[in-house]
Length: 186
Ligand SMILES: [Zn+2]
Image (cartoon, rainbow, N blue to C red; front, side, top):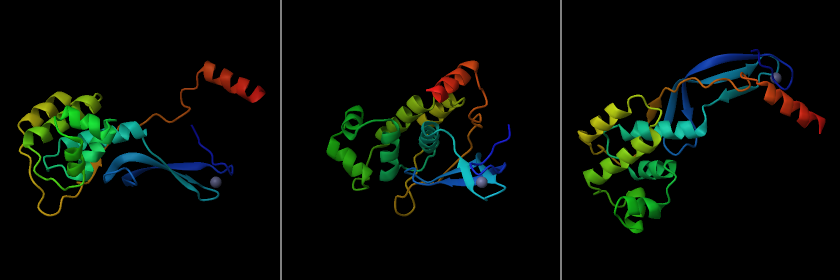
């Protein structure tokens, strides 16, 4: 289906090989996932990103299976992606609110391997529902040898390839057309 710009110009569609997602919380590069639409007339460009929920979940689970020790920013990112408040996270991990806060601010770096694996396991279990490799990843996690960072604890860049999202408006059901007409008529 041909797409058009607000100016009336036709849009050309290209796949972006590598796209760094801004302001996600941790650095994420999407590989062959983001589409770029460019107007042939006014030159305006627009990137089409996957659904934010899907993106956050993919970033969190991708990080969960990387053996590098989690840094504070990543712990916070995973917690927020899980939709948990710090106090709820603390309860699950049998820690105090203050401890979680220190972990997330890199002020307490002696988190036990068991606790770190539990965080990763919760992330995989709750966010990896669409992951066909979930079973394998959980097995891999159990045997994982978590490696401390070489220098300062900084988030690891996640390179993720996501399945293509169907272009919006592709499945135009009669119901949608009807409600559209009703809306226009009101
Ligand atoms: Zn245009």
